[in-house]
Length: 250
Ligand code: ADP
Ligand code: MG
Image 1 (cartoon, rainbow, N blue to C red):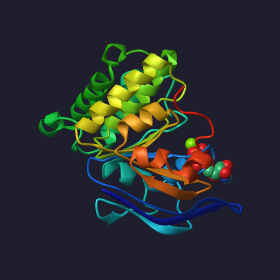
Image 2: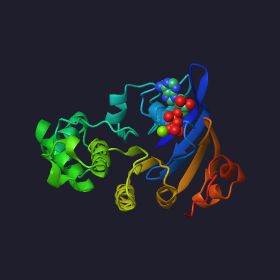
Image 3: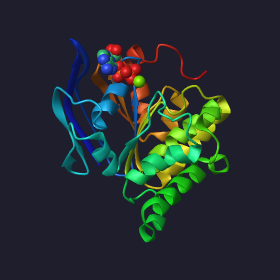
Image 4: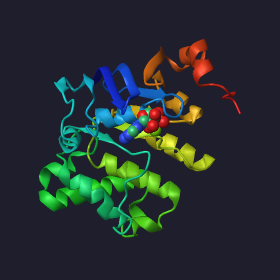
């Protein structure tokens, strides 16, 4: 599904990514963890075409997408959420999801409703299905700015789902949520995974990341320092030193 090979990217001499390689298989959920500033969001920005790396390559479904137009990457089936949400506050909840839904072709995530309709109808059907999936269909006509924080996280997720992704990059989807909202978010991600969507998950909540990921990679200072099953990674002394400074079982 995704092959990231030897990506390097520096910002004014600061090496944000220093030779990162990883793969994600079809339908796999890969957890990407690491301390603040280790390069997780930068890696997502490279994969999604926001940043062009200094060197290295990204291949999605067998095609090189390094440095491609972000809109073309989304249209090819690779969608993402942002750590700092990108909602349009003065648009309605539905309109926020319509924007990406209208831009993308029907794909694997949503049911085939779009095939039989054209243009705006198909986009609106996709948008409404994505909203129903995250439980915001009742709020379709509400201004996005008036949503509670946890609802905004789910709207951000709906925007990505409306793109019909085969691979979804999630950047801290549970950040700032209450324990019960976090558990709802975990359930949502589980249901996306169960529909066969491959997921790259950056998340600080270890309970969420451990339960959802079949495999983890650990970034530290722009380098992959470990990888393996959640159990293998938590037992790796280098990881414990870099990342698990405090007990995870609180
Ligand atoms: P993480 O998401 O793991 O917390 P980031 O990928 O946001 O880390 O940041 C990795 C490093 O790259 C940090 O040192 C950060 O300051 C730097 N960085 C990220 N984006 C930029 C940018 N646009 N300009 C300059 N430095 C950046
Ligand atoms: Mg980040």
